[in-house]
Length: 78
Image 1 (tube, rainbow, N blue to C red):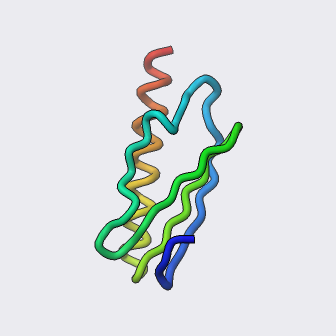
Image 2 (cartoon, one colour; image 1 turned 180 degrees about the horizontal axis):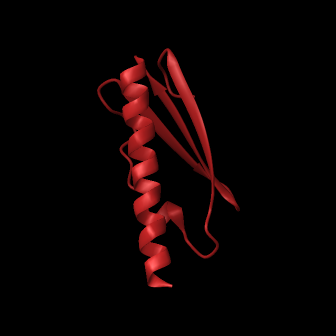
């Protein structure tokens, strides 16, 4: 798990036919947090470690914003 005193793990179900690993471009290390991404068959896992709660919230928001953009673009294409 990424370093830091605050952490979160997000498990997000994948949309069928969408290859998240080819699209997701999340920087793994920030000033006060780090994010790791692990893809499975039906879900994708984000592990976030942060030095403080504000950095944790910002990283969670960045992940969710990225997932939302990818999924909305994919749905609009269908």
